[in-house]
Length: 372
Ligand code: ARG
Image 1 (tube, rainbow, N blue to C red):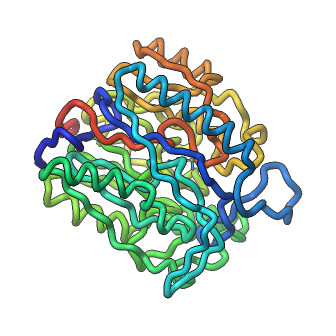
Image 2: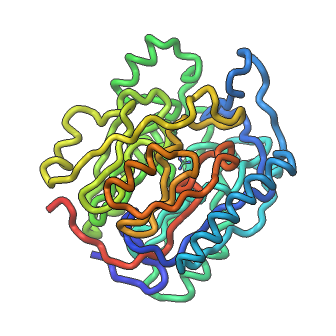
């Protein structure tokens, strides 16, 4: 296996946390409509245009206040917290292959950055507006990379994001066609180029579980396999056939400690894929119904009500959970977790909740084999 570094060392989602990056809403913009994304205002009549350009100062302040609350909580638990560098997300981007009117934000480092042991990987990404989203984290990456020669830094190959990389019409497929195509796991990105977002992975020591989704294709998973397996990891593709718009695994399949995964009752694993877990005595526990229905989620939020289960573990029995999600907190108490509730709803419209809005850089512990 890889070497252990005192600077960058994180092998799973639950070991005791030492250092983490918490996102920031500074300079955030609305996500633009593009071939990889069609944002919609919740409960608005069809055709209502989604806003564009910078988010309002009030919305940014509200999110930043909750992010600051998370920072204080983490610091009071002895965790070192780092933040992204300022970035002008209102800048348009242009490469030889595409143009995007503006960029998005640095609220969700989880989507872009991942620590696997002593290695930091910058994901290729799947959306044009997020092509350069690694930039706010580069200063930190250089700091870690300079601090310890054992730190490995990898940027995955960038896809073209040209029109041909996307499947024309995906967003308009009628429901029947969608049902049919779901079985072949074909979404808005084609299979020709390497595409993945970091948040489609979940780390279980030697095993890296990765979901095929709108943001991660089979070429992306192949790249991860060829990159990680020679180092001793096993890359395990998983599928959730009832999720019609899958992106990012952390509202669907969330490991809490060795032997325990929180699962999404609306999104069961593809038949047969639970065997690995069952054979190794892992318990799959369904998350309770979220306190907010899909229709009551914030109007600009593009995620589902299952942001409820997007918890952040700061130790194998310590979980940070959104304040209003009492049923989930109850379940966690019953399973002997110490629960830390924090308000986080004003962050939802920026793409996620507590797990999405963070990127853990260092946890105590090494790369164990949980599926021997
Ligand atoms: N697609 C997920 C859902 O709506 C949201 C995932 C958010 N995760 C993230 N890392 N940004 O349930």
